[in-house]
Image (cartoon, rainbow, N blue to C red; front, top):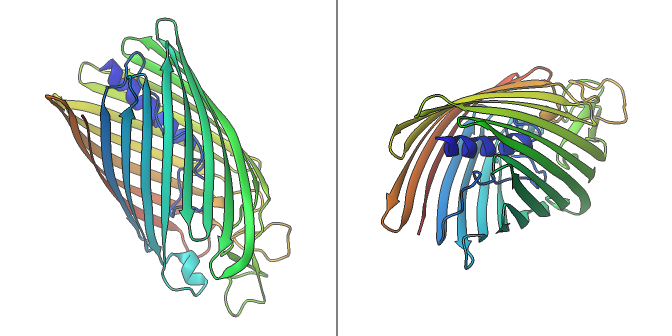
Length: 387
């Protein structure tokens, strides 16, 4: 059970710190450069051979937005279990008639985003290093990113220190306007410390610093000056303007504890703050139960609350330097409950595992005109195996 605790802890910690908001209701057109994969449990070598995994994620909400996201990953050992290559492809297909689109008198919008990721990891003694490259393409947004990671274990593999450096270059366009060209450059790093306190207790801390420089507004979002919403009757309706520099800090702490042979409990807290004066708090709790050999059930709750950016206003009655209609920069909160079941079967040559998850969430907007809450339902299925 100790290995299972370490695995869930590392995965949840990376997920929490990698997402600046943890509350987006629609996939944003921003770089997704950053830590994406969990480190392996201490002392456990990856299996030899190859691994293939596929998953499907579906999300629908009361703001008339639907997202379908299939994903496939192939992992191959390169001559030895200490060297591996990961190749991942994912597709985001979403359609929306959200409040942002309806107030702009625009019909339902549909879009596809393709993403490919290649990563290499090499273990050396009690440590490892990795390299990765990711490209993401939409008709009006192209992102290229690289990453470098490293890990080292100490004190009989009870303490793990790891870190990542990452950077990206994104090009922003606007559909129907071949003269619109903008760009944004991002870079940052992540440092993590994990410690096995007892045979049943794991503690972990991480800190991430990320900076983005360049165009960070939406080329499709307009703001009414003088009050009200942007429409054909607005006196002044201008493209949104936000600062071209944003520095983000995120800190995460997590504790996991085995409760008997078949139950593991976990808790997480994350604090985020940036140079736009937006700050947020995330808290999460989960419980995992081993129902039978290879069968697991996990329930989780996550809460989230954030302040608005310093320049965000529900309405702009006078001209200011910065103005936006981005709901994710307003004051908001989110509550999410999820249940996941998984089953793993050891085969004569390899392993087969399946999983399914259902989640529901409620987003509450405190200062966004035209929308007070969004209810969302998420379903995901996964199938994988090694051979």
